[in-house]
Each structure stands twice: as C-alpha cells, then as structure tokens.
Image (cartoon, rainbow, N blue to C red; front, side):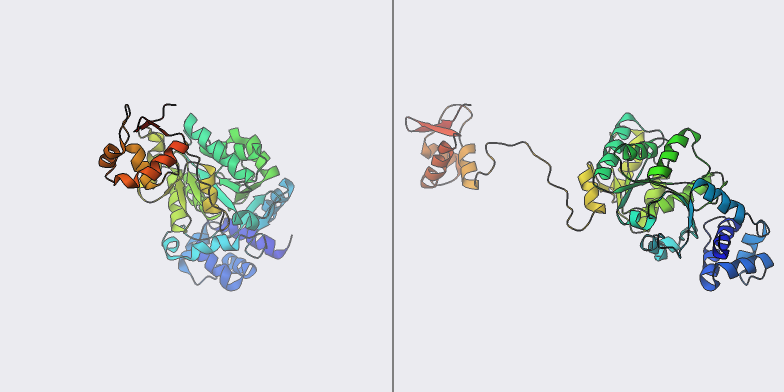
Length: 374
C-alpha cells in the first residue's frame, strides 16, 4: 500500500463524486500534496474548501484499501494502464462540461481481472426499464447474447429488469459484462442480485467511483449513468418510460458523442414510450444484433442485408417486367394487345416474351400469350 494509493483512496471519499474542483486540484499538484492541502485547510478554492469541510478529518483510506484487498479488488487511477483514457476524454467536450456532473471519475474501485481500458474499446451498454415486459426481456437477452458471441462487452447498471437480463444473458453466453454500481463494490444492490453481481466480479468487472461501504442513493444512480455511457461505444435502450434512468443514460451518451440506439415497441406500450421519443429525436432504430455491431464494431464490420422472400420476378429487366404485367390474370392476349397495355412497340416485346417463356413464367398458345399456371 503506497502513499499514492492512500491518497487516491482518501480523495475518493472526501468529496461526494464527481467533483470538478477536486479533479482540478489533483491535476495541478498531484494526489499526495492535494491530501495535505485539504487536511490542513490550505486551499485557494473557496468552493472546494466548503466541499471538503465536512469530511476532511475522516480518513478511511487504509480501511477502504484493506476491504478492497480482502475482496480481491483493485483501485484504478488515471496513472494506471487499465485506466480507460480514451473513453474518458469525451468528458472534455463542451456539451459535457456544461453539466454539473460532467467530469471524469477521480478513481475507480473495481472487482475483476480484465482491463477496463481494453473492455471500453469494444463495448455496448444495454439499459432499460426495471419493469420490463416479456417482449423487452426477450429482446435484451437476444441482443446481449449476440454481442457476447461477437466479442462485444456488455455494460449495464446491475438493476432489475433490462439491466439484469442483459448481464445474465451475457454470462450465459460466456461473454464479458461490466456492471457499473451506484455504491461501493462491497454493497450488492439490489440485494436480490447478490449472486449475479458475484458472478460478474468473477467473470467480468464490477466498477464504482464510490469507496467501499457507500450505500446507493438516487443522486448516485444519476451520476453513475454517465459512466455507463462513457464506457460504451454505443448505448442501446430497450424499453424505457418517458422519465427514466435509461433515458438519462441515453442523454449522457448523446452529450459524450456516443451513438444512441433504441428498440421500438408496440405504440400502445408505456414501457416503450421513452424509446419512441428517442427515435423521434434522432436515435438510431435497431432491431437485431448485427445492426448494433455495425455501430460499435470495427470499421467495415457491416450488418448483412436481411433475407427477403424470393419472387420469380426477381431479376427481370424493366421491359420484361412490363411485358409480364401487361398480361391479364386470366385469359390471353396477342402481341399487339400486349403492346397497347405495356405502352411499348410490339417488336420490342418479342424478345422479352421469349425470355419469360424460357423462364417458365408465360406460355404461348395459338398466337396468344398468357401467364403460366403454377
């Protein structure tokens, strides 16, 4: 346990994350000196003085790091190679900086062995309502499993509903999933997801900017959502109300410059009302995993065209199609009569009619042409 480790751990608790003022101080003088200034009260920033006043004498760094070590976790800081530097650069943009919580986390408390920097390079967040319908659960599970099969990490918030379905489907497909928590990594929430979160810690990553022991709270869920969006190449919303955490995550994704995708649902479903608003406001409508991979995958990783029903008329030239459509559904016509119906000279119809006859689409009988019965 180094002095830097203890300093970072102290700083993650002394001010409620995220704090633009604290981040600026650490960037200017480093974590160890920042701790010394805070504890002594020697701060030039009056706002930061007020923010740190209540907790500056509460130093739980050693205990927090011991708890993390006991859980087999690690504290990841901007100095570590596992820090998702590229993903967090988006917090420097004007749309994000204008938001009070629009700042990168100071540190990340993590359980799991994978590199978060590598995970963020090819990842997608799946979010949605806690009160998911069977339709939403089916779509979330299908998408998560499909992403796992294509080596795309699935990021979500560990909550009931769409979040939990996405995590479980990814684990079931032996993929990598990341749960970003609104409390300490030692505080499973919701408690009914304790077993699932334990599996994620073993097979994927549990991530939080809050130190051990911190309980989830409403404002922490809202600030947590920015990390779900930032750690993802795109955010996919599957069922969301008009006011929901999923819509908040989509808003963060848009501000961070990430693509926002949404699954449509029945127009009568209140569970999909938020998705329909997102689509109307410019979100990408998606219906299958290939379309999502096209957004988050590598350049040239395009979704194949969906299979369409084949027709015997596929591949006909314009003249051949006009000749065919000039034929009556019942009965037969002479070439001259077909010329009138098709609006083409009779001499131009002889070749197309012969081609249609060879294809088995029409037949000639006593100098008249009719559609071949099948």
